[in-house]
Image 1 (cartoon, rainbow, N blue to C red):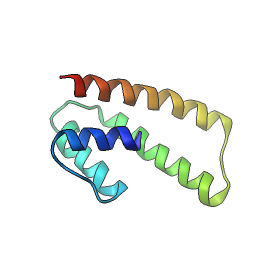
Image 2: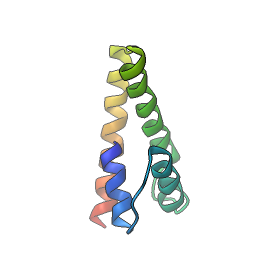
Image 3: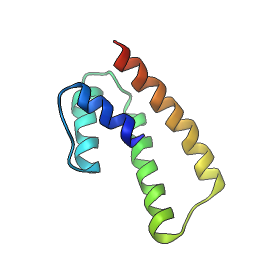
Image 4: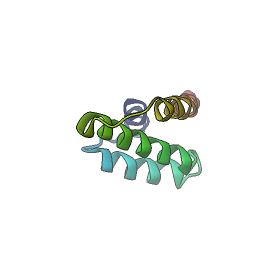
Length: 85
């Protein structure tokens, strides 16, 4: 999701410097323009949190991973659609 989001930002001529900046840019460039549903950005934030929990706290679950895979696929599909325009 992170790299897909970066591709969207690059397509608008911008480059992010952090996860936070990437999320702000997505909201300004795509959510505010009603090109992306804010729930997809929330899913990306959830992915970041789950990754950090797994990396740093050794906290993870199969059910969280499965739910995230579905959200990531939706995010990817929507981003591909936007990039094809």
